[in-house]
Image 1 (cartoon, rainbow, N blue to C red):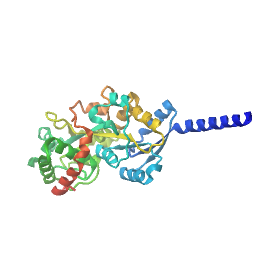
Image 2: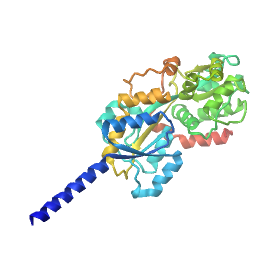
Image 3: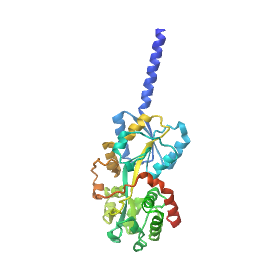
Image 4: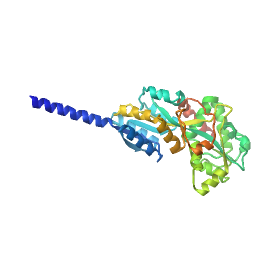
Length: 338
């Protein structure tokens, strides 16, 4: 009998040890594709002993995978860029509410919801050719529709989330009529049909293919930090404007994530989300990918970001960007912003 009891005790101990080992795992589905995030994840494992198993892919592919996996999904956390993409995961019912006093304390209210959180920010700025456009003519997003810029505006696709989120913010602040007026004016000012990404637009402005564009700040900062002679020369030819500084401020988008409802390692998932709001993790976002920390108190030393100067940021709640995304797409389609 004593032997049997001893065997049972050993069995329970083995199970407990196995469960403990399982808790030291985090399965991360990420649509962030930045090499600098490697250090971010490695530091989390070093601090907590929790091993990260990571699957990377495009946002829609990962969301479809999570849906198809259903209750058997191994995913604990979904990370991506753009508020609308995060809101899509919420609308699909994939995220679980997270109650964390630490996250509530660290992250500003306008950068979080009950089930997903922003951990870094980026602004959408105006970039202009110093020899072709006067800075005083491009101080606001509305200026991009001014007829004096006819044949000078270039952009990536209107269906891209970065442009849709910008248009969603215009709708939220000024209504659909003003938003459509802006979109229609931008199309009228096209130097060419939309193509390429933000980096392509900046380079097109620098070489004079167009006079002005809009870009997320980390693309600008990346080029400013370049050591390639040709890119250094290109950046000497462009200027950067913080739009709407006398109004709502520059449009802000985010990178963030949330814990999935079916997460098998919920404790590890919450620890990871809280870690992403730590000073050290916030600096990884800023120094590694030229983004701003979501936590106001965190100070970073990134010469490229500092060279852009201080600015007024739009404090529109990130969930509102998703609220008007479909209307933004309808407007872009209606005016021919393809």
